[in-house]
Amino acid sequence: MKNNFQLFIIPVIFLMLLPEYGSAQYSSKKIRTKNEKYTDSLKQVEYNYKFPIWGQKVYQKGFDIPYPAGIMANYMWMEQGIDITNMQLGLKTNSLDIPLTSVDFIQFGENSNTSYTFNVRPDLWVFPFLNVYGILGYGNSNTEVNLVAPIELQSVVEQGITTAGFGVMGAGGIGPVWFSVDANFTWNKPELLDKSTRVNVVGIRLGKTFTFKNKPESNIAVWAGGMSINMSSETRGQITLSEAIPGLEERTDQIVANYNDWYDNEATIPQKVIADQVLAPIIERIDAADGSAIIRYGMDKQVSQKWNGIIGVQYQYNKHWMLRSEAGLIGDRKSFLLSLNYRFLM
Image (cartoon, rainbow, N blue to C red):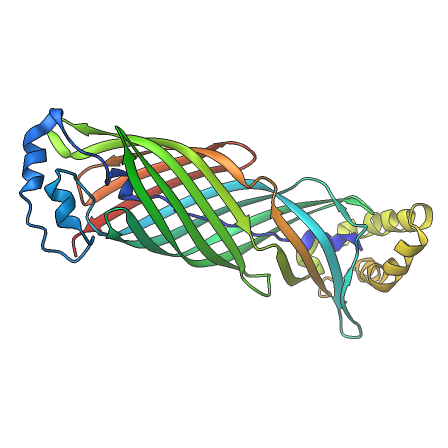
């Protein structure tokens, strides 16, 4: 039965997601005419710290770099489309145990995922141009799935997600602007899935930093770029009928009638064979309003659009504290990030 499709909680990422930027944006910012005294003072710095490696050489050239170690607290919200293919369904009750069975005639309309996450990202500049970091977080995922065939059905599934991962970022400068290329890999474990979903995020940014004449350790940076998200496609999980179809008792008659109409008037012989094997038993549980029946599901899912455009701004109060915001505005994916970063020497 198609209802199962609702289970298709395609939690994301959150993200996805998540941070892929870094204070490296300033690693190539050389302060010149506005404050030559500050530039000269950098050349005199005795850099007796382990990281970043080659930190002394960078200061000797008059370049300002961020403190090497930091911890960033992030809040991220994201909304994006999800594509679902290769649908498989199964059923488990006290008397039935139907394994996952391919139901290739199930068709979906527009599906979407809205998620938010809070995460912490410790990081370290190993070299002045190379940053490595970890990600730990928790969030919430709300997935809306719209089935259009063999019957029309909408399902909304909400669940918590834990996230862990790591990333690496390279940064440098070209004339008056800086650039950064960031990649991170996270494993996101939704409550209703059997295994974690791996999400790979790549971010490319190009920006410029504006320093304050009388306070050279403070600055404002602005940037634009693109972000790509790619998920591991295979998903396996299970969900009860009551979770998959909110208000099951009130919707039972309509769902059963729509299914019977499809079966009697539209289904082909091969489709009926599969329907008798797996969909009919599910429909019987729906007809009985058996909310405890467990629907097994498997699918391949992916974000509808991998790349989207982003813009961002960061205010650096001093070399310890930075406040950052970034928004995804162009493309199918919409996102908003707010983060607070504290950096220190080591």
